[in-house]
Image (cartoon, rainbow, N blue to C red; front, side, top):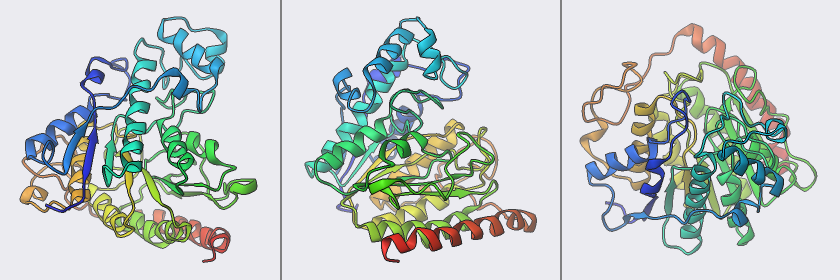
Amino acid sequence: MSERRLAFVYTPEIERLAYPAHCPFKTQRPGQTRQRLRGFGWLGIPGRTEVEPARATREILARHHSARYLDELERAAAGQLTVAGLQMGLGTTDTPVFGDLLEYGAWACGASLTAADLLLRGEADIAFALLGGFHHAHAERAAGFCYVNDVVLACDRLATAGKRVVCLDIDAHHGDGTQAAFYGRNDVFTLSMHETGATLFPWGGFENELGEGDGRGFNLNVPLPAGTYDAAFLRAFERVSIPLVRAFRPDVMVLELGMDTLSGDPLTHLSLTNNAMVTAIEHLLDLQLPILVTGGGGYHVENTVRGWALAWQAFAEEHHDLELGLGGVMLGNIDWAGGLRDHHLPVTEEQRGQVDPALETTLRTIEQTVFPLHGL
């Protein structure tokens, strides 16, 4: 077992909370990941600890969200959807009104803030807060299953403590709420790798969105073409994301680790396997930074749970035969026979023809526009 200390921030309190049954966002994913890790003997042992979060209070949420928006969230949770609430994004298919919407969000924010505090106190090297990852929530607007933004709160907590923060978002959806919060700041470098807004909500996050004022050059988007496969994703990750992170010289990283990038996710159009996540994590470990890992998207529940469990294994540098086995995105089902890694997916020439030229154009644009801003 490596000497790296991992913490899994979780509370059973969330097990009584749920989004409406018809909603693709499933709150049981962190709990199922926890059960998987405990079953493997990778959690609840020295250096692999569980930590109970503190629920975020309204005062804490107000560090990013306006008072009138929090008022509307409270009303909506009580079953009162007003015109003002509708104007703030509440009551849509993606942001339904239900009794637990604010309670779950408060626990998610509390988990990410607890994880941030563990890193600041030096009590963990890697802190998992899979309850969170609500990167679409804006200061006064709900969107994309997100009501309050734990990622923004955690990044701000770290930055307020004097840390240079890189927020790396590799969810399939663009982290628009996080981008908006830090668009004019240079103490938090927001870097989002996601399916292009030409084919996926929230229909933005293009490479020309670079930040403004003091924040110019400290916001980067790497839009990925639909059909992006492991080698193409890693090409972008290694060619632009890692060099820019190194140039920024962060003290700490917040990583949004969505699993809706995996092939077979019902809401997205990428073609990754979880093997790409392992390689990406290996690069991140080379940076030797404290890392806060949040959840995010992932609408095929079993593939998401397996992906997060594999990510924990990769961060812990546990090497076991559990990498072998059947199931995952290759089979397109939820069969799982002891393994965590997906089989590698074949890539067709047609797929390469659709992905590679578009991705190359994006990478060259970033190298020409963003690299010079960071002395690269």
